[in-house]
Length: 267
Image 1 (cartoon, one colour):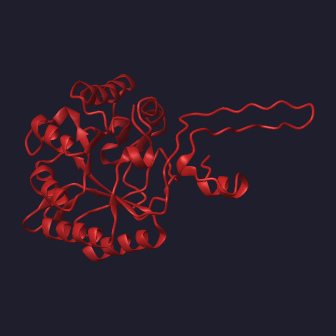
Image 2 (tube, helix red, strand yellow):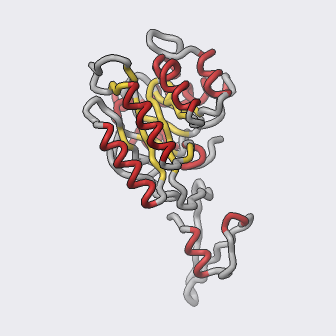
């Protein structure tokens, strides 16, 4: 259940400003002779003031995300989010711990990811992956984003999702492709994203920004590899298009945001 701030302004104190709210009381009034029970799980207040924002998310922690995306976003005053394959850090075409430290110090956040599809694992092996992902972040003192997860390849099943929910507030797949996040309204088991692939034209991504600006929503872009040459892998995108998209987002006044700010603070 999500209760918009506008609800409180309309049905509560007419002069109430939810930005200054520090206590929220919810009461149940059962019918005569009846009992009522209220149960809350993971309660949190999410800011949604109608200002268009953007999450620049990157899967896997590939080297070009450090060498290409990081300087482009920094120059525009943006920060990013990396879904870290914790078991692949420092490997071929992957960022090192030193590079993770540098971008984290610049304000980036890291969410959890893995190299193998989790539903193919035993329950105990999957549990070890979820635990190890959080432990990697904790050992390295990377606490921003620690309670968010990305399914490898977007592959999941209901049983493994219940297990993952014990460790993570959100568990992102790769769909729906085009949805724009309405501030304060999202599905924890599949936060909507705009998944960038080789066939995704720059004009479509810009149009996605235009819609977000019109409705005051939050954009959630997801990238894999940026390339200075011709894209070859399905998930490649040119660095020229990425630069143009970042410049366009900045020109439209989009503010940088994060998983923690959008979906709930980690802990």
